[in-house]
Length: 76
Picture: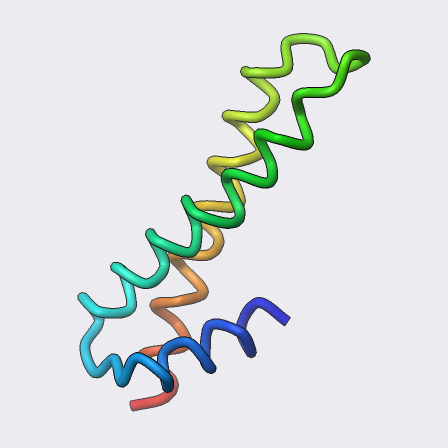
């Protein structure tokens, strides 16, 4: 689903370079994936919620940037 959504975003924004793909990946990764991961970690029963949120958010951020780059490379 993430690859399909990123493909649609790439198409809508008419990205044509790997640099464009990385910018899109960073924006989506920070704005959506990392933000949601950190927010989900901030529950009362999670031990060390900020560490958990940073690790989980970082994982999703890096994953989305990589998927964004792959989508751009495959679509050209």
